[in-house]
Image (cartoon, rainbow, N blue to C red; front, side, top):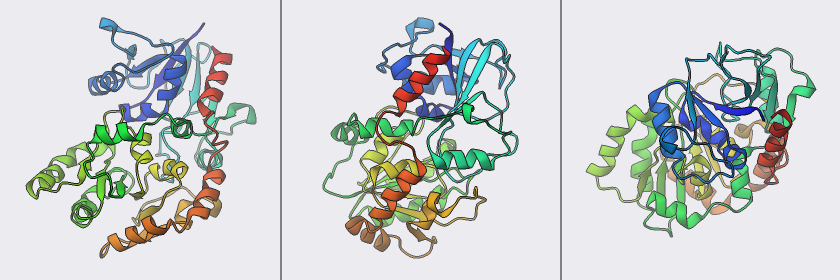
Length: 350
């Protein structure tokens, strides 16, 4: 059997193939020590049907390569990133899965032709078609659905365990997750609104702040603000760890999501709970209205209080019908079998 590899730039992107590793195993390709450390921590004691072990029997097995040079690899490479890569096409088959289906365009120089594309649904396909990717044949498109949805649909997430892991104290309060994208790409709003949200929500809600992985450097002053003012119902998530506080686990306990241009908004559709979009100036991939979440939910312009809008949405979920329709417009299947479809296809290559 050929070898199976997984590729990402940073550890948070591996969350999009975590379920594949659980079912079929494989080896992970990393480029830098920080990603290696985060990867080993995230997969510590991770249950896999076919785990791989590297040095000192640490799971999973990892391979360190030069940036985007995979000419030494033979087998099948599943990539979460679109960067151009050096490889031997006769020896290495590539499959693109991506790391989110949002509205931000692929950056210049990121797009790379792959042998196959795992497609989560029409929104993902629209984004790829709008990129500068060379023409893709239908044979290259493998529609699997959204891998992130499977554990939620199949009831594999223990809500109480997630609440314990985060440390939620008052469990009678509604839970608000604030998940901005990163500041340097995508108009991230972490520094713009975190302090206001902490002050507004601490009295009546649990607030979970889930910053983008690349915004780690901005967290110390926010944590100091929480500690100094003794806020008791605000929780910061470590985006470097894909354990119980991974994206799907966080979203599964939320009563409402606040975000800006992050693809996490579309991941949240499976929960069928309210979403509020923060308006920012950002170039976005053109989308037809039926694939555009912004056409459906309430917006906040960053001025005045947001709590009244949050209260209205958590009490009524007034766009429930529109959110359900949008879910099935954007994503295929939604039946909890996306991982199995991906595994079945990979087995044909392996």
